[in-house]
Length: 235
Ligand code: BEZ
Image (cartoon, rainbow, N blue to C red; front, side, top):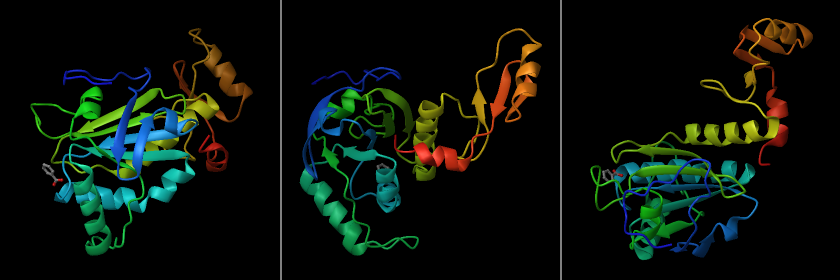
């Protein structure tokens, strides 16, 4: 589990690195403690800083939405547990921001003073900061496979609707064997495999199934209703 190499980067499609950690919700063992669940592991640079506070309020407000998607949120910074607890209490008791107040962050926040976990996940990027984690987000599926990752610099607060959209798109892709086009949202058409490289066959495919539209031989979409998507979410 321990590594001192900050150049280690996780790779999509591989098992997400295993770790044990102390958190605001007690000790956790990843992936064992999260069997059968999606996990979003995300890092922030430091407690008691403004961008991070705005992010925790936004994510904290959406906790139930992620729970409903069978997704466990896990935060991390290289601060200690007492700092985490004091910061989360301050957020809950004192901060009112953009109509959000009394935000009670209930997901675990990892104490990574040792930087063991941050280094395993390539969260320490010395040209951005040698002493703080960047803003990273890892989407991990119920088989503990790393499915998507996003890295942001210290100065840029994340868009949590986009993080939810990515999770829903991954679940939809798995549930229906489809890909999702640019800016996809539930209810929009999804991408189905091109029928073959024989140019004429896409027209046959589109003619056979009125839910399918082909724009060219390599680009076909299919209707997938919001209800169909939602009936399988969290799976
Ligand atoms: C912030 O959350 O505001 C922040 C944290 C670390 C460095 C820069 C900004």
